Image (cartoon, rainbow, N blue to C red):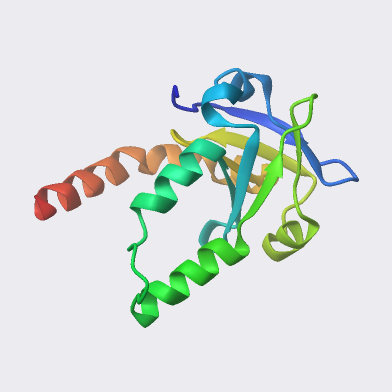
Length: 155
């Protein structure tokens, strides 16, 4: 699947439906990626991460230790990750219904921005994104350097 990139303003309607922006929807091939999206609330940044069915399946099989007897930390992480995630089907108009409890948990408003983040989409408060955008841009090269340093230390 081609990476998701860019940003688009969107609105979550009164029925908790979010229209996946056309520029992002165009990258999805339902035969390859599935019609289901996985909504994963991410507390640290108060965002909702949306993964295609194929990507969520791929990541869930490779990122969590596959064992019948995981340690306490891994077991709790699995419970939280899968317990707070929800699968939602995209309708014929390219919309997904976000569970209301996830919106409440994150405090997401109706006015949002959908950001392409490579293998996923992120749904963020539009106001918060607009307030932080310039600072995020200014920190981008520093964050890349830190990531490179961490990779070099590992390998």
